[in-house]
Image (cartoon, rainbow, N blue to C red; front, side, top):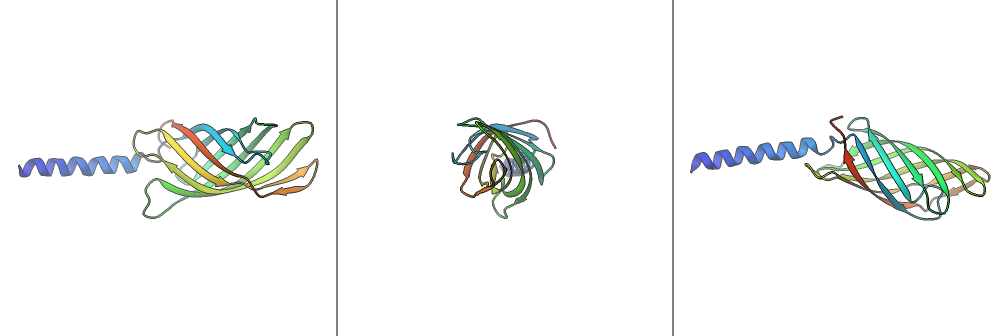
Length: 156
């Protein structure tokens, strides 16, 4: 009986280590972004490439009432005592096409959660203000979004 308890304890320990080690091993994340409609980059498709544990680049293709493309560099920091949850920040730029052209800068800050183990789902919520520079100068601070991504790819 004691050997079974030891074996179960060892297996449980190894399972927990495996869960922790695989949480951020996905290099690629692709999905949808659902956000405010008053921004140039708000709702559309999102793709994130994780360069390592703390760096990523993200591309967003907006297709709601205007076509726009944005790209950002992001940095991630773990939240203590909450496995697989990180906060992140970053910035980049965008270009939009409608009846007029938009070019501008954007920043981002948010929370990111990668489901543990073999569940290939990533969720994030963020605030992404924009500063439009071409066609007109304007600051949009109101965009908040949620992204749901499928995670895939090997270890970083």
